[in-house]
Length: 441
Image (cartoon, rainbow, N blue to C red; front, top):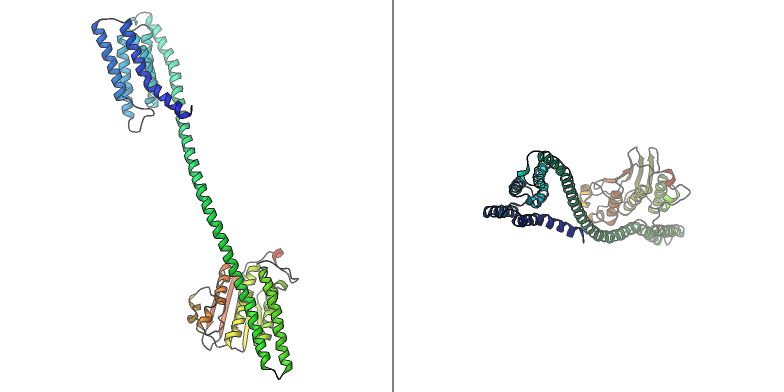
């Protein structure tokens, strides 16, 4: 038998017991009491009235909200009927005892008065009826009232409290069951969401890796191949000058080896070679020297402020910005001079790339309308180039590290590119030193 079955049995017993007590009392009265027609009629009439009162005015426990007054009226009526029946015949004590069962329907403040009234009525039956309340029996009656109040009161109060606790436990169990059901539903929903997140994370990881490889290919292989082609074309123009031809071929071979090494490093997600062998200012200076040799354009490098070690991700972004800016100058600016300035401040580190080339209109490339712009269109003068992969890749790189880039240019006025990143100091143990310790990006 589970808790619900036991609760239902108690409820049925609580509802049926008054009728059982009333029936036993009526039968005993008819068999053992006075047999006058008036007495029989009165006993039957009061018994029927009590049964109808129980049936028509009964209130369930616990009392529903809004029916508290009806419950008080119901219990008061029961006590009056018990009093009338006990006055008629003390054998109605079998019904009078069930009056204790109705006390729980009253507000807590009325429990004790109701028990006291019912105890007085029960003591009346125990002394043999109202007719015996005289002389020394009154003292006995008073003692019986106190005993009934003590015994019946304790039992009644404990029963009510236990019933309330039992109902509270049932409610708690139901609430826990509902909470468990909601928890299972939430866990099932979370499992589905987790599976979706895993799939999305995997797809995002694949996309990020593709974008990384695309950027590395553009910054290393594509630019390297462009330089190789340029040197080989220059070598063909000097067929009658073996020395200059050999120099261009040597530069092409060197670019091919460097591009191959950078491609391997990109596959392994390592820092660019120059950053693995030196700090950012030295790496940019070395980049400018090699670019000047291959492009034939003079470039000036300047470092202001006190250089501080930056996290690898920030150094890579600035190095790639310088690399892309110089590449665009060589391809589009047609200038005779270029400059790189690396400025360290307390808040930001700024890289400026300048040239005296043909310049371009930033509004035609969309650069003027974008607060975070990738590197230099470098005086491209071409709207298509301004929206090319290099610009998009630099936008993404700078946004990922919280950086920004501004472009100033005009037709015939050259181009100035300013890339800035937060001046976040890097822990000493995480910085790649000049010895060539490679940090993963």
